[in-house]
Length: 224
Image 1 (tube, one colour):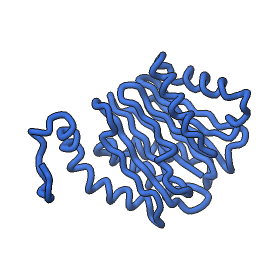
Image 2: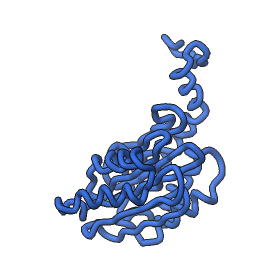
Image 3: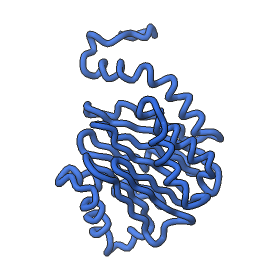
């Protein structure tokens, strides 16, 4: 019930996801500055995303990290319900879809990117995500939202999408962008609207974390 795209852009990592389930990004999106990014979806176990990043932090090899995590879970058999993607500091992304992945499911990988989905309208959707992201222009966040919009327009999931989320990490120890629409009839469009509000202020909020004395005020009561 989820489609997602994980990308690397220089030193930054980003993820965008949409789902028929509520609050998709709260469970699916996993990123660590300087390390990589992962998605844990389908019948979701969020701890697997954390485990993928821990393995990446240890050795930096995305393919090995995926093999480590899926191999360790084999004895539990629950891994067959999971769909995972992972991307490190170099090379291509990697994907895993267990034998119990729901509905039509697929993945697509490229250097610096990996897309996957389940309960899809067709197996073409992950490739649409990748191709639309590659063709898009603008800030990383804008390209990710453009890709998700293209996937929805190409058929998206088998049913309606009700939640969407976007997250990016860069060169600070927190998510420089972390936007979610947890339940709406048009979550992807609303995510785009939210990004329009957020993006002009993003770097200022990083400055607030690093150097509050130089950070601009936005004129609200009690603001700096």
